[in-house]
Image (cartoon, rainbow, N blue to C red; front, side):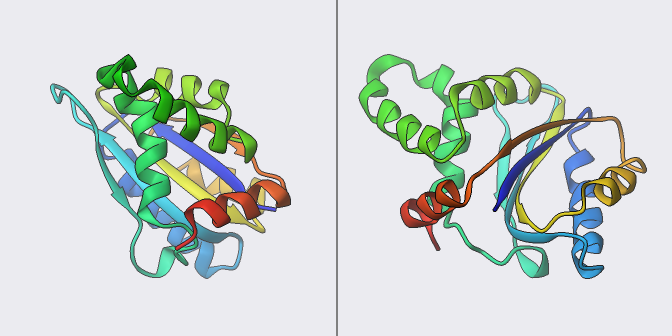
Length: 162
């Protein structure tokens, strides 16, 4: 079963630091990262910047469409408005069927704001206590998590598989 986990940091650089910790955890076989992305929202910027994971940390189980849609719903939908409501409703429906519901979207939108950053991890086989301990060395952060069932994970890969 996969877990989509979001760690929000109180600085625009915090998620970049988390990327290094996650890479170390994966090398120790404490976590298996299927895919990841980082959002950084510098103070004064109108919108956040995003980047999809590269290199040894991600196995690339999802394509960029998934991250683009998820980030669009979280960060850009309030800017787009109702003009694309039907398309957004369809995307939201797909995501809610895999375990990423409106509450997850709203909570992430409320917490990842200007002056913060977040790392989004799609993982399996994580050892929660070791991750929590490793993340203590990072700047202040908040955990937002949404567990995906095996069925939800399969649907997500069916719709957005790399």
